[in-house]
Length: 80
Image (cartoon, rainbow, N blue to C red):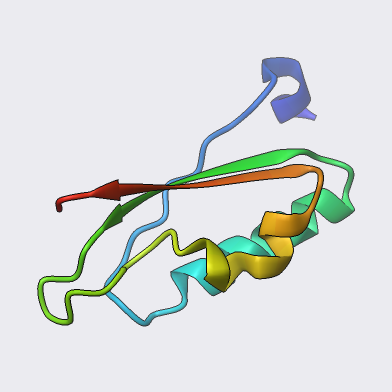
């Protein structure tokens, strides 16, 4: 596998609030963990200017992934 030769790879995910970014990240992460990989999620988390709420990186929305021993999930707040 190409990624094993290089050691790691990065994926960037972005989009508007409510489109399922956290759900997708958790599903992809659990899939990769199921294949024996370890993963890290560093979620840059600006606040929504519309609702004032979180757009991405709310660890509670990735509860299963956040509890897995092979995963590191770190939300990083940002002022946008």
